[in-house]
Amino acid sequence: LGVRVVPVGLHFERPHAVRSRVFLRAGRPLWAHEYADTYRRDARSAVERMTADLQAALTEQIVHVEDVDMEPLVIEIETVYREDLLSKTELSLPQGSKFAREAVLSGEIAKAVAALNDEDPECLVHLRNDLLSYRRKRELIRVPEELLADQDLPSLRRAALEACARLVLGFPAAVYGTLTCGLPNRITAWFLRRKNPDAARIHQTRLGIGLLVYGLYFPALLILVRPWLGNLGTVLFGASLAPAGLFALAYWRMWSRERERVRFAWLLATRGAMVRRLQRERQRLIEEMDRLLNEYLELRERTEAPGTSLT
Image (cartoon, rainbow, N blue to C red; front, top):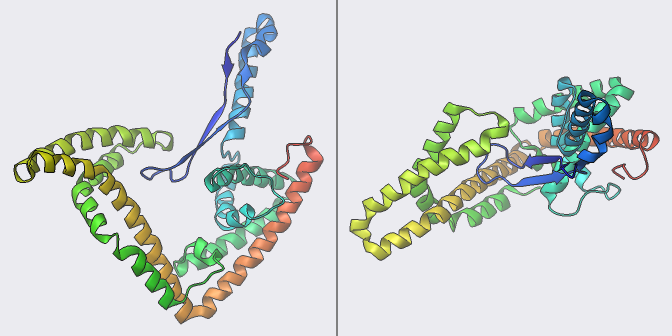
């Protein structure tokens, strides 16, 4: 009877990426003794009650969308509205990293969509149509949402100079990391695609495959270079492999971001009117979602106990 079950939710920043950060949320424990009296009267009923309570507690810790038809809308709202929500001082969000606050917001967005769908489904139909139209226009010119939301719009010259400054210095180290660690990384990715695990197991599967592939590749590489580098050189070379590989991964991600930023600056310089029309459309969507946010918070205030609201 001293057993307690703690509901835990895991949120991966980049579910399919190497070295993704993880935000862990733990809820209020469920104590076995709270179900003891029910269990003595009806064991099956006690098990069903505890299972239902645990499922509800777990749902509170993760991003849970009950109606799968609503999932595309939840994703679109999160994509467009999350940065604006993070800046709202009237929302009480957990202290800590931006990633932790984003994880909490993701769950709240899903709850808000479910509540508003019950209260006023027609408003969500209009919002979904407008968001999908906006996304199609954004994808047509291939501009990431975060760049459209950025208020500090770079000139083409400035974006190009900043990209060069960030990228040139790290290029030799990134090439070294790619040449030494690129092959086992690709082999690991190939095996992962072949195995195709579900989302809940992708990280542990990648870890298992990676340990096997790198565990065979690195010793073989060190044996191969030892005649040329000698004992001390081989030790230093081996010590550099993991940091160089991780740096290369981070560098190429940075290169992708900088390339998008330069391309966006080029679009501003050559097709600025079209980009600004899209930004105005985005602003109208933000204003509509602000209105729905206030509607949701009022709904929560009417229906939930004090202290449970996001405000």
